[in-house]
Image (cartoon, rainbow, N blue to C red):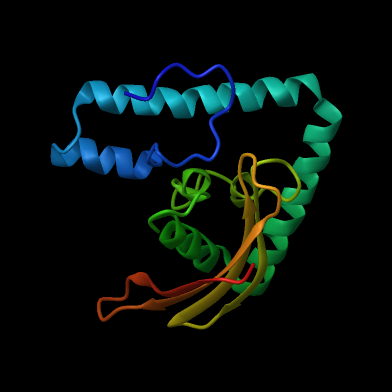
Length: 174
């Protein structure tokens, strides 16, 4: 269905992020074979990324430090639970390329810095974030694949009547 890939797959969209693949499989809308081939695409991406980090450990370490610093700043200003909830909400947005990076942001055993990519391709960084108990406004910048310039989007998230965070509006800034 998705073919054999020899290089990293960018942008990460025709293949759903893993959280949606699991939902499709569990609901019966996707066969096990299609699920396995789609997950293999994600596995190849991770393998390529690990190989790249092994080839250039100094660049990988400096990116790790930047990502960790950015995550600490977000947690200090908004709290880890709010940041994770915003990331999980963004992971469910249709046609949002970073969803494949954010799909397991709700798992507290995965450090927050793992979801950020400050300078390393694929880029995903939080430019600004404002939070209140019922709303989150978040401006993110991301760049996947052969895109020449990063995309900057603003999301307005709000809680529905049940208390679940949902996307109220989405707008591309540049």
